[in-house]
Image 1 (cartoon, rainbow, N blue to C red):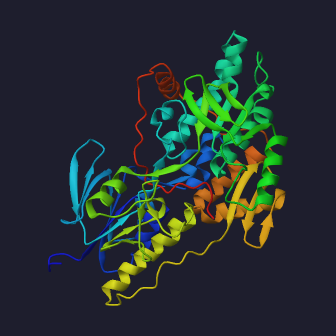
Image 2 (tube, rainbow, N blue to C red):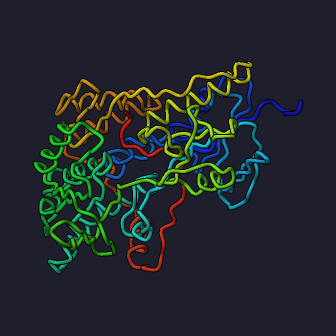
Amino acid sequence: MTENHRHRVVIIGAGFGGLNAARALRKAPVDVTVINATNHHIFEPLIYQVAAGVLSPGEVAVPIREALRHQKNTEVLVGWATDIDAEGRTVTAAGPDGTRYQVPYDTLVLAAGATQSYFGHDGYGQWAPSLKTMDDALEIRARIFGAFEEAELATDPRQVQRLLTFVIVGAGPTGVEMAGQIAEIAHRTLPGRYRRIDPRTARVVLIDAVDRVLPTFDARLSQHVLEKLRKIGVEVRLGEKVVDLDETGVKVESAQGTERIEALTKIWAAGVAGTTLARRLAASVGAETDRAGRILVGPDLTVPGHPEIFVLGEAMSLRDLPGVAQVAMQGGTYAGRTVARRLTGRSTTKPFSYFDKGNMAAVSRFYAIADLGPVRLTGLIGWLGWLAVHLFYLPRMRNRVTVLLRWAVSFLGRGRSEAVITSQQVLARDALRHAPEAQREVAAPTTESSSSLS
């Protein structure tokens, strides 16, 4: 390092990992540059509620500049990080207008999350969007509420049935929570608002090849959730694999054979994969990756042979750590503090140790589960715990107040404050539906994927 600059830390991604790494460096004698594809940080555990019309985008997101406004040593650049030169220690990024720029670094923190995995069938993304970004959430919201509007206009009973069938692929937290929300929309929010259709006839189908919902939770809690989903009208199909998916439906395969489910609205909540940037970095430095394309890191979250490169959250693979927000949060804080320690000459750092605070998932109104080690909660108590934890971790007091008010409207009443569909969303949805050659570009999101804070 020359005398012309302080130690330069570049953080790619402003999700839970990146933001916590930046905050851990707020008092360190370093210059921090945060590169993110959007100007906001998403509180991803609640993004599904934007898709369900419960919350607005501004209630689950905070501008990055506002989140870091008190850090005088930090700058924020909006753009896609496209390449990393590990030898020259520079990051190449493309701004919103496509202009490329380079940012030098002494320490790099890669916290770019993961992309949705369609298991080799990326074309599925055109018809079954994932829930990774705010744009995804708004698109899914338009598809859900737009399906009921189209069904009201349809004259062919078969088309009405296709429109009122919703298929969610993946029985993890995101899939379970989305299925529960769509069932509540159909059975509780919309009845009485249409004259030609009965929203309660909607069919909500949750599909996964695994043998139980929420497989990372305690088996007894999974069984409770399965019973609750069926009680609120969700058709749960376990041990079934999606083998084909197109505009008008999905084909599933089970031990009994194959079956096609006609459905115009599909949501993909199964599997994640490493980003293109992570794969490029791994190839350039000779690092190993797991089957999902995530970089295998050392105990200190750095790339083997490159102590100046940290990899966080769902971009890294270490000891089968789960891809949840808490891993990213704790990893970000650890990386930031490690950099600060190094600059004081204390290079010896304890290996990263993850403190598992447990798992939580909200299934429906007044019903959630919490798997907190020896403590397991279900029903109303679990739901109240879920509310409290998520309110606590929301980034601003303003968000906490408005989210609490929105929850009161949706959970105590029957309304959905954000059920509005704009004309642009309708046009975008129809453009995808009627352009079979179009491909949905899966860009590397910069938020760690997790529907649970724990």
